[in-house]
Amino acid sequence: MASGSMTMTTVVVETNLLSRQELRDRLQAVGDSRYHHRHPFHLRMHRGELTRGQLQAWALNRYYYQSRIPIKDSLLLAKSDDPAFRRAWRKRILDHDGDKDGYGGVEKWIQLAEASGLRREQVIPCTGVLPGVRYAVDAYLALVRDNSLLIAVASSLTELFSRDLISLRMDQMRLHYPYLTPGLAYFVGRLTQAPEDATFALDYVSTHAATRAQQEQVIQALEAKCAILWAQLDAIDYAYVVPGNIPPGAFVPDCD
Ligand SMILES: O=C(O)c1cc(C(=O)O)c2c(n1)C(=O)C(=O)c1cc(C(=O)O)[nH]c1-2
Picture 1: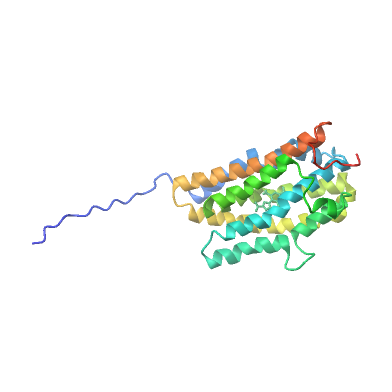
Picture 2: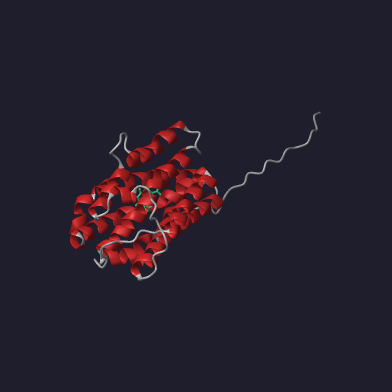
C-alpha cells in the first residue's frame, strides 16, 4: 500500500583517519623539527655563551609570555560548555596565578628574573618588552581567541616537548650561570605540570578530532604555536646578540 519514497542514508566513513598513534607520531615530528629547543639562542644558552645582560633580556621578555598564559587559558576556558573540561583546565590558571598573592608560576618567574639581577619593578610593567616578542605572544592569544576549542587546545601541545628542554636548561643554568640557581623554582614546578597538561591536551585532541580535516587542523595549530615560540627567540636573538640592534624603548641591559 504505502509506496512512499525510500530515504537513502549515506554514512560517510572516514577511511583516512589517523589512528591515535599516527596522530601522536605526526605531532612528534613537528616538535622534533620545529620546537624552540633547536633555536640558536637556546643552543647558545645551553653552551654557557650568554652574558648576564642577555639572560636578563631573555627573562624580561619571556615574562610577557608567562604573564599572558593565564589570560590565554581564561579565553580558552570560555570556549567550553563542559563543566568537567573547565574543572580540568582551570588547574593551569591556578598553576600560574596561585590561589593567593605571592604564589604561582608568574611570581616564580619574577624570582628567576630577580636572580638574573633585575628588579621586579623593571619586569612586571612589561614596558621594555621587544616589539617582536609582544607581537608573537599576542598572536598566541589571538590564535586561541579566534579559533575553535579543538585548535585552542592543540596549540598548547608544545608542552609535549617542554619537559625535556626545561630539564636540560636547568642543568645548564646550574653549570654555567650559578647565580640563577636560587631562581629555578619555576622550572621545578613545570617538570611535573607540563607533562600532566600535555597528556590531558593530547587525549582531548585525539578524542575530539573526529575527521581527518580536524586532525590536520590540530597538527597545523601545533606548527603555528612552534612558530610563535620561535619568533619570540628570533626577536631576542636579533636585539641582544648583535650589537646595535636594540629597538627604541626596549630593555637595555646595564651589565655584560
Ligand atoms: O620554557 C619553555 O620552553 C616553555 C615552553 C612552553 C611551551 O612549549 O609552550 C611553555 C612553557 N615554557 C611554560 O612555562 C608554560 O607555562 C607554558 C604554557 C604553555 C601553553 O601553551 O599553555 N606553554 C608553555
